[in-house]
Image (cartoon, rainbow, N blue to C red):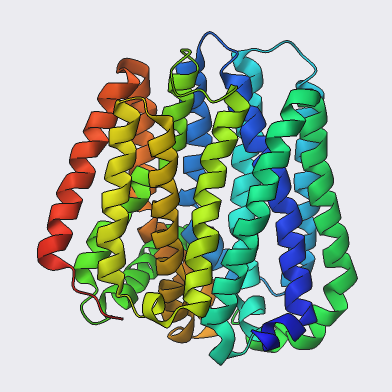
Length: 418
């Protein structure tokens, strides 16, 4: 822990990320609150959900490009400039009367921004790998996760308050400003990163990128990534369950938003507060789970299989609570689920970072993320279709059955002790 706190460069990079996270959190709460004011709220939620799904499909694609990009810091700076401009555009559009067309434009901006975010992540992987010692990586990931979760509680609370006093125009403007601040930080620390990370010699990016071979290369790297994952002893069963878990967690908030638009019993004070509390319960669980990983040897020793079983059970309880319109029990179940997720992530992350050549880190890691999030993508696409035709309670039943089957499968098959 002391080494992490003394690593000023790592902390500044983390600060940049935390500031942009505030803007993203505020934008998400604002957009979901905006949707509940529309008559076609189900369609609007479906559109927003799709805008958050599609960028996941580009993870492998941008992982390949990121590994082949020589001037990584310069490229990160350029993407931040673009994102500043995009949210300035949203701010102007938010001056118009609330309509489905505004939602479509805001969702398109969200799609492009999230896609650029995927690219930035790929560019950061080898840089982060170089500025943190190998022996400190699992602890650094747990520290980052805990700090990010702590700040997200502040972000959610402040976001819910700002939505009650500011217009959607000002909220989008603040989001643009957060990316501008992150851009400023990156400009300040650019030379420090260059001193620690030499693009020219540490990356295999010198080869020419040919778009005609893109599909073949993506499939090749995806297969390689999955092969890396499944080569880990006793991990096969767990890897079959993780996409289902991710997919189920991904639609909880959109499901609540659809229900809130109908004036449901799930409301606590107002729509923005309810959405914010869902986020707070999740990040609070992340803080506790991250803290347990840092300070509790017993919790740290839990196997991935055991954590998955507990996680699936809490997600099942979340859907049951939703079905019976008990928002408080749903918040509690979401909190517990986040505790277990935050315990799994550092374990998986450390395994990945410690077993992959850093010159292919973004490519392989991108393929792994794509695999892990495949359930997320399929689930969001399924939800975006179901929400147009089925009541929210029926959708909850569909996911209850799916999660229950995954849980029963883990009892028989998952015995991971990594």
